[in-house]
Length: 227
Image (tube, rainbow, N blue to C red; front, side, top):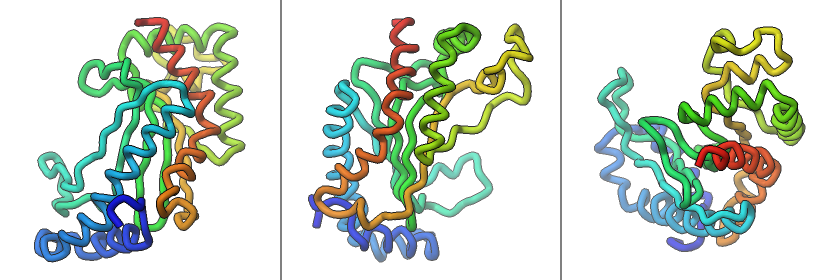
């Protein structure tokens, strides 16, 4: 089971955890968590990193987020996340500051679906400046075309961070909506979890990212100009 990827028991455990989100219940079912969630997720993450690396042409590193929730700054004191989340980014890039990240791929395994994403949740200040400058030029048309292509493939774009365009950007510009973003990512929910299970599930998951690869490469080019 450990090396075989996600199974029906993986999703069943997450559903039961959502209904019994207490330390006592988790401790009583910790062996199930390790067998059906933690160990398969470790196997999937390693295989998915290799497959995505081949698809995007960059060696990727990865991170799996903790099952324990950070309870310091929230009123919701339920102790555990009811999902499994991973991120993948190029080994030759770096995080800048507290939140800024390089172009990444994201995977969230939920109880009844899988959510995939690609992009940057937050640009560094130099990348944000380059992004806004690019939007003002003819080169900015490329990102509009890419987003339209991904929307047709079932992706949705992250919500804008600003209510208005930033200072200095033309308010009437045709890409003023994109200028309200401090980062840019696209997301898609997949409810057919059966096709993503088993020893080859990571390959099926990787294929879900393919429509977002041109968008991800566009962001990599944006970052490359500043390195």
